[in-house]
Image 1 (tube, rainbow, N blue to C red):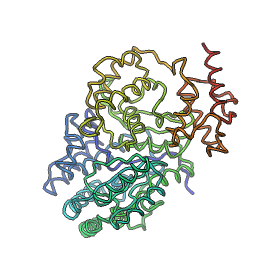
Image 2 (image 1 turned 30 degrees about the vertical axis):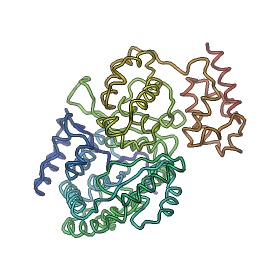
Image 3 (image 1 turned 180 degrees about the vertical axis):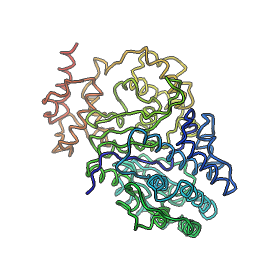
Image 4 (image 1 turned 120 degrees about the vertical axis):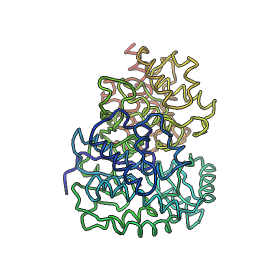
Length: 508
């Protein structure tokens, strides 16, 4: 078995960010942009470099409605360009592509030339535009894949399928609009969060079988080359090799589920400790929800002229799940230096039950995401707690921001002058613990009673208790106090609440 420590993740849908390469004049990224524009012209289409270098370029939602061909090529180009940026900090041991990101992963691994990788994307887009039924859709469920499969079986529509297993409680179902709507209604009846995705096609479902055949015929002349680095395929369920028919794999991918969570867990079992997302589509958050004790980073473009405006950097956000807080809707103050927009996206996604890739910086909170004024006010309270804004959040400008990108800019502007705060004295610690455990573990809050034995009654084993202790420490601002062995030894939340209360009192 090969030694695996660093994994590069290449996003698919959700991987497009307008102007992601703005200010990056490097030759390696320029080569990727030029190649994409040149291949787009071969297909009689306009280039995509402006989409990726201009911050005022159309949003993903706009492109999905007006030019899905350009959107797909921009996703590929963003992934490959971001890979080159990430590679400046060191080479990966393995590359993994999520959904259409597999084309980018195979391209950066050398299986296809840069030009042929772009051609594969263009042929795929043309096949989908010509042969995909118009009545298909996708829905994300806050359920494990096996439970999502039960819902699919109950609907009994041959076009419906479990499309993507992203994380322990995030599964995407794809198929005919009517059947997807039925799944969403069933989920609602069961109290399960269901979110219809703004997807141009019902990816990874039987509905794309005709498009897959057309794609297969269109790419017959493209030549597969020897791999220069290891590639793990979430569709194939393992590593691919030079004798793997990779074009056939990409064809099959249109109608085959993506087992992303299984891929992450397998690589983690092989020793992977560092996952680098080439872009910012939310894959880092999925990794943190799926495996413990890993470091995640992503490639980001500075939002302001910090130091050298022509330099694109890799912003590290190392996360140990013993201290991670992104899944909890009530969290402690985010540390200085984090990417505020990414923090906001994960906070909104985890609280509202949306897949993080849906929560883009330029999506209109009300028009695109359905977050009305009441919900925006509720979320503002969580934003204030997360970033430690205090009374600053009462400034009417916060509620007036219509996108997360605008809100991120405002948070960045004011947060430097606001002292970090923990959970205020006087709150009911037990109630806070019950909500924290319920929201993170996906249990109804009424199940999490103070006297329930964490292991015997709730099935929270020692590993999960250690993970939850990190969230508790962050939530209550316990710092080094949480390293006291008494915390992990408490068998009920009532006992844990008493200990937290005692520690907080002694610190005042």
